[in-house]
Length: 296
Image (tube, rainbow, N blue to C red; front, side, top):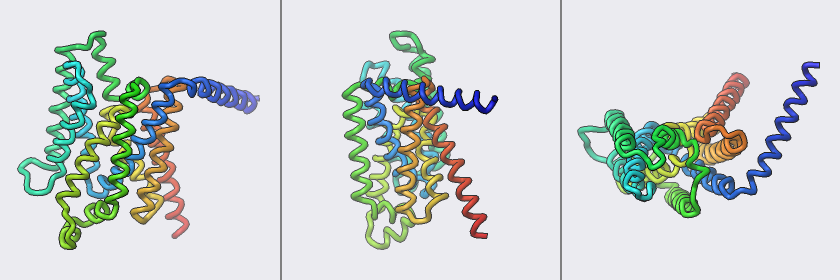
C-alpha cells in the first residue's frame, strides 16, 4: 500500500514537472536562460581545469566579489553593470595572475580584494539604495544568482553569447600553449613559449568567465562552477584532454538540470545549479572509489 502511494506521488510529480516545463519552454526568459546558462557553464569548466591544476581555484571567489562591488556601483550610477564590471575585473585578474614579483600575492591578495569589494558594494547599496528600496533582495540576487539569469534582456543575451564564444574560441586556438603553461611554466619558457603573454590571456578570459558566471550562479557560488566539474572529471579520466571534455559535459548537464528545476519549482537558480554539481561530484567520487576497489 505504501509503495503504491509513493509510486503515485512520484508519477504525479513527474507529470507536473514535465507539464509545467512544457509551458515554461514557450516563454522567452526560459529560452534565454537555456542559451546563456550552458554556455557560461562550458566556459567555466574549460577554465576551471586550468585554474585547479595551477592551484588558482580560489581566484574565482576573489574576482566574483570584485564583480559584485563594481556591479553595485554601476547600478547606483545607472550604468550597465556588465560594461563596468568587465574591465575592472579584467584589470584585477591581470594583477593577480601576472608573472613577476609582487609584495602582495596569493591568498593574501585574494582575501583583501574579496572583503574590500564585497564591503564596498554593500555599503554603496545601503547609502544609495535602488529605486524599489529592496536592498536585501538585490544583494541576494547578485550574491546567489536568484533571479538574474531569468531576467536577462535581449542585449544581455547577445553580449553573453558573444563573450562566451570568444572565450571558447580562444581556448581552442591556444589549447597547446595553455596546456604547456598549465603544467610547467619553466619548461614552456625554455621552449620559447611567451609564458607572460599566455598568463595574461588566461587572466582576461578568467575575468570574462567570472563576470558572466555572476549572472548564472551569483558572486558567492562561482567557485563551485569552476571547481566542481574539474574535480569530477579528474576522478573519471587521466589525460588532460579527457578531463577537459569530461568537465565540459558535466558542467553543461548540471547547468541545464539546475536551470530547469529552478525555473519549474521556483528555487534559487544559483543554489540549484550548485546542488546539481554537488550531486555529480558525489557520484564521481563513488565511481572513483568503485574503480579503485576493483583494481585492488
